[in-house]
Image 1: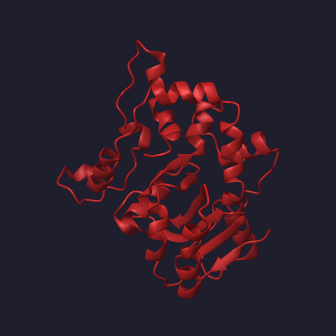
Image 2: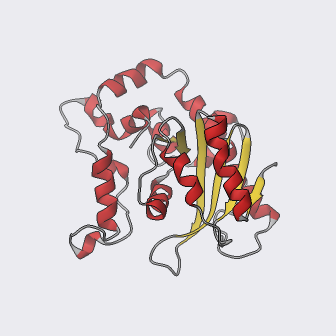
Image 3: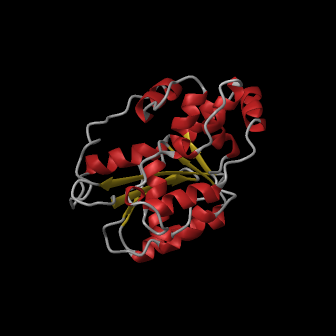
Length: 243
């Protein structure tokens, strides 16, 4: 597997200019973190894949990640995650703003019949007929140096995300149009405020000053039982491609 490992500021600065220059439609994103001994997730790796290239950024190598912020703030680039709630939380804590134009293959998998909380491994197998090696799933990402096997595993989490997204969307046109019409767009301010409260940046009860754990769908209005179409609101976030 081919990817670029980034652990210096110069390399990170160079990478950060590529999305604005290449203007990709999609940017596949994943993170690796540890949360065993820290209250908040400790970011260890950021994996990115766009324009056919994969990058693994060592977030523990004492580099400033700020140059990546404009890319995540760019509404013209769709950021594709799988089960991206904690990833979004991490980026919000880094830069104080929500990533723009987000798609989540786990939510889309739910829309297209794979059930709730479908795994990346299952989607990869079902859509691409590709088996993943998940032996490093519970590895300690905070330890250095990382092994070749660990880095290969990290890269696999993004290298096929765009393909999976496209497979899930393909052939769903009419259904997606109906869902999109049923939802006028999720108010980003509501989600941002909820995360700010979890981070203790806004006044609220002590219970809210904990890591964001409710999930995006739990922040949406409750669906009404009388209309089956309205029960698709969480999935419709994807179709709007923005939280």
